[in-house]
Length: 294
Image (spheres, helix red, strand yellow):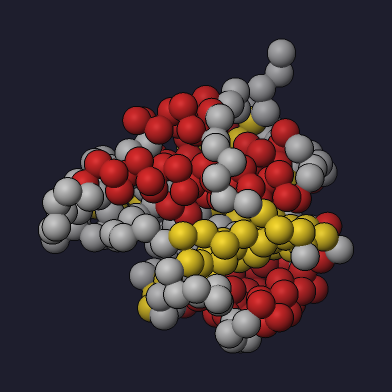
């Protein structure tokens, strides 16, 4: 039995769960073979009072990739990218995607264009232009949140109609067959967010309203991206793909919230995603949040 091969280029933390620490475990559970390249190596995520580590540059990425290439172990079914901390590193990803696509024209590039959230950047703003000009045109799947979708298109998302316009703009800028705005604040109820999925170049649209859990969670987008890859590999049905990705992420967040909800002032460590403890829901996500076909 052949396992799908994934090249996952994301952040790494020594302590906690974000980036590759969030993605590799669920992918392994579902039988994917994952080769992980770390875009940064930090002690922990940035919600802690102290963070130390290294931001990798383009030469670091090219060194790693050149050895994979020299050993002829660089044929992949998927390439994913998440948090990137350096402009030159992101530009090198674009080069690698193009080269891997020449080797395997069926490869799928799934991009979570991590820029920020809630109106602020948490990466260098210069990365936005590289995403717009070099990454969006070559990605097969784009998974921005509302803030990132707005930054990539220059359009505001203030209604559902706006969200679909932004999805169309991202489809039109490249080859992305699927665009999902993973979270947006356009729900009728203030205690909900909306996830909007535009599949098959916008011919199929689905959405889900998701209850907001109290707390500050870091890494949820990385879980969502991994769940999308897993379930889009298993099924082509848009409502099923979005439903599984949303419910996987929500179940992990629920487990995390339940672990600290009795503490009125939990620490950053206490709010780390309970990923390992969520093995069962990662393998078999519940069907709590319903997806609506638009």
